[in-house]
Amino acid sequence: MSKTYKAGQHIYRVLPCPSYEISCLENWMSDMAEAGFHLVKDGIFAGIATFEYREPEKVKYRLEATEKNTSMWSDDGGEPDPEQVELSRQYSWEYVAKLKDFYIYRSADTSARELNTDPEVQALALNAVKKRQRDAIVSSLILLVLYPIILTKGCLLLTTISMGTWWMAFMLLFAVLLIADEIRAFCHLKRVQRKLMDEGNYSSETDWKKSMAPYYCRKIVKTVLAIVLICAFLRAWGVSITNENKILLAEYSGTIPFATMRDFAGEGSKGYEETMTGLSMGFNTIEEKADLLAPRCIEFNEHARVQKADGSYIDGGLDVDYCEMRTQGLAHLLIQEMRRMDKMKKGFQLIDAPTLDADEVIAYMNDLHWPTVIIRKGNVVAKAYFYQFSSAYTMTIEEWAGMICDSLGD
Picture 1 (tube, rainbow, N blue to C red):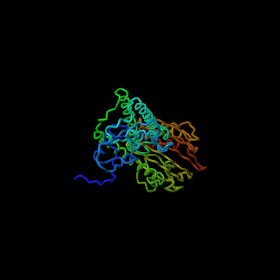
Picture 2: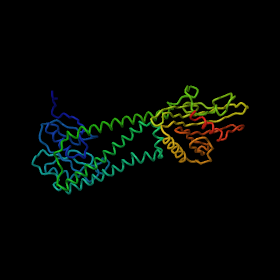
Picture 3: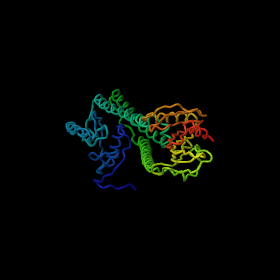
Picture 4: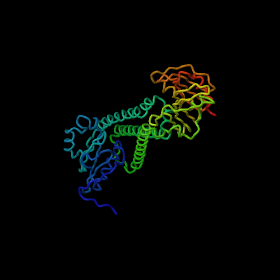
């Protein structure tokens, strides 16, 4: 049973196609008018149109491309020139609303002459819209491609592992869909402009019903992706603030796949004591996670004081980022990105790498002036820095890095 509407009642409808599909929108609004639904004044916002129910009638709608910016932040609020509105009214055309780069006019007079009878003028206005669309493509490429690369300092693999491969894939899909829509709009406008120049008009027979399903599908996919990504970002931000995924070393029941300060002290060591604590600060904590590209990753932080068998002490802190990558090629790329990320920090200084039984070794002083070593053995990567407070005994980088290297892959 069809729904009954009262005169003056408002209904809301999502636009069935994007604004650049001119014929589709014109036909859709005309069909709505024949069903008794007439677009209200300034009745389009955020892709939703507001209609008022009145007597059904045949109404012609036209989308007129504008050469000027229609943003509400422009000097005149993006509205058309009053003189143009008045001139159009004299020819039985009423200005109704604006939609992005177009002004919407309508006429209930079926014999009314067209608003713009010169195809060259129409093509010129469309050319201005096309240029703005081209600028939008460039802006999208900068915002969605170039800016993220700059923000991550070109370390896309590190960012992917940190965020999660699936989340990165969702972000890339979202960016591709947005850019594809911008390119689709530009190409469509170019075809309409060419048709105006070649044939003097563009087709007004386009069936909006055929465009509706693909358009809605794209909007739904983009909306869902946007919501998912926003939720993921907020959760990741909350986790980074609270260190939610970290647990205390004393509570960790798994096997640590690399040498720690206990191992540095050697056999016969005693008196192991954690010297700094605080889950919120990440002291003496461990975080383990898995990813599609890196099946096992560990962020390890240890601050302790331990006595060796000879009575001397090892006192300091050890930080290790450990990753088991899917392939050796990914592992090689990862150590390069780790080095590049630290190289951009103040105080970075390359030092002679210790001779280790590894495929690749990089050594440098980090921004805190602590000796750091990145080791790759096959598909395993470990980045570690060890700072020491004991004046009685100090391990050289060859010693502690060698122990970590020898422990990898055990």
